[in-house]
Image (tube, rainbow, N blue to C red):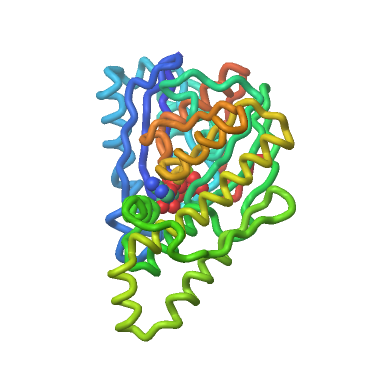
Length: 335
Ligand SMILES: Nc1ncnc2c1ncn2[C@@H]1O[C@H](COP(=O)(O)OP(=O)(O)OP(=O)(O)O)[C@@H](O)[C@H]1O
Ligand SMILES: [Mg+2]
């Protein structure tokens, strides 16, 4: 079965061809430079850019996958959650394509795409498994059940982990997206330089806005010149301290989740799953506590079309397709 996956929920226009379990191509046009000067994604600019790039990105995915559109068996597309104007571009294009080819259309929940991204170019962990989704817009601890059902154990009450990385990076004068920059600088820093707060909530919910505020207040206590000096001298130390605070909370939640559910396998997915410290620490926790850990290849952590094709193919094998009246669902959740 050959499925085209299309993703346009945020600031990446992406498409991929999945053939059975093999990713034949995965193409992404990222808009990071477009949004950098604003320090975050500007919805109007994002949807216009999707509009410009959707055709060339899909064509590149077909070319690189050595396939033509008429060899496709289905078109899978993200229909939520995400920015309405961005989702509409991908969904409208996918509908027209599926209609023109007379193949099924499958609307995919973007978060479900992330959940199954661990099974791209890798054996799928046997379900049920515990999955930590850590991305720009979401932080959720989820049990992925065998029948494509999901139980959300907890989610963030305010900022997502990626959002915390991005907002704090801005306070440090690093660009957007800030996660990769903090990861890079932290490699040379002292994680014990400053003890930033870790919010441990009673249940499995997360909160990262207190950490962001704490960084803001800490830096605000200095006069401008002094702050500049401190940041240029200790940027790596600040980055390492913040990164450790975020990773401590995430790893602790995974450990508690395993203890509570008895899960034998943990997956960590989404953009923040690219973080080197998080990957290292979750793997170490697995070695210590006796659970297996899967993280996607780096290119499948960020938003991509392959994970949408994968989730779509799983739905299609269960006979699930979407009607031509399918609408975007900007607030779609997993439960
Ligand atoms: N190495 C890294 N360390 C920490 N964070 C990272 C790293 N690489 C990417 N990120 C973060 O990942 C986020 C982007 O992830 P992703 O593309 O999955 O999110 P999104 O699509 O914006 O949100 P969502 O998937 O929730 O809709 C950004 O916040 C970015 O800073
Ligand atoms: Mg995403």
